[in-house]
Length: 490
Image: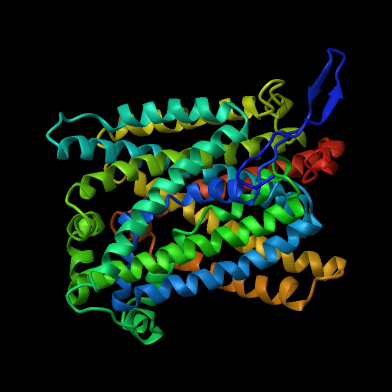
């Protein structure tokens, strides 16, 4: 059977005295389904239309090379990550890997940081979707509507879809991904067929020297930020067929797919404007891509782009919600969180309770934020930016954990110095530098004046410290629970 037609596995069961019920998640997602599920996280059309212009602003003509370099960097991260998935066959991802490499205390700290970071990302999706929907309605002569109305509607849709089996979400995400990638590729093909922009085609955007004329650090920061999502493949380990093959292929495939898409789109967007690309990106980044696709394809594609940005963010919210629910579920199975969230739905074979809890937490997060910022100005950037810093920090720690793990346990057949030390080492240094850049340029990441919003970083610090403190409590007061941390009940 092909990867595109997943079939649900018979769930693992345990007898609790009331009949056989599932005790772990199950599924038969193939490489394609898993790839599309995690790729939806990065919202490709939103990146092409909303973030690539910023890389052009700071990177100038060499912005395309930044995406080439980022693709290579994240493939190096993927090497260590994939190697670890084979040795640590747990669905906990960051939580399991850091626990194995750096210990249970660090592992629970990483788990809490991951949950908070993904929750912030999820909240950002709803805010961004609401703001974009409001803007679209006004642009076609409609009434002014509050962003929270559309955000709340999206929250309800996501909550319902994620309550069911992962296959339901995977099908929705597959359709959404195909549509938004199609829009991006229609533009790319149109630019090629038109013979490029006013200056034709040039190899300059692929030149490291061209990037050197811009702000290399900030450009790379924005480029790395938009790749996030692929690092969640291992979270779905129990829901894919032959995980030792599916997860590595989906991880590498996701990085390569989105990397090629961003390289092509950045190059051809730059080409479409020619020598005026930097000015267009600087003066009106939000309209750069919609205006270009309207000119090169057809005028109605300008509005269509905004519509697909909305569906793209809805898909991203589904993807992120699923990731958070599985982190909560796995922590519940290890008894680091109440066992309530570890129950598998007997019919849908989904982490239904963890999913519901995720929806409630996001509502609790967004309601006060919405009341204090009814216009939503800058709120999406703050949530996205803070989440991104947290996830980049986690990726850095995971890369270090990989090296420590293999230094302690040794290598087995098929594992070499490159996979176990060199690739994760380069990734750790590069991603660590990116985190430092993000903090130094935090005003560019979340908005505001320099230094104004640095206090937001305490949210990430407190979440990690809370996880560490809880692990220390378990170690002293509940040693059996402590012994099970990072094991995801397997």
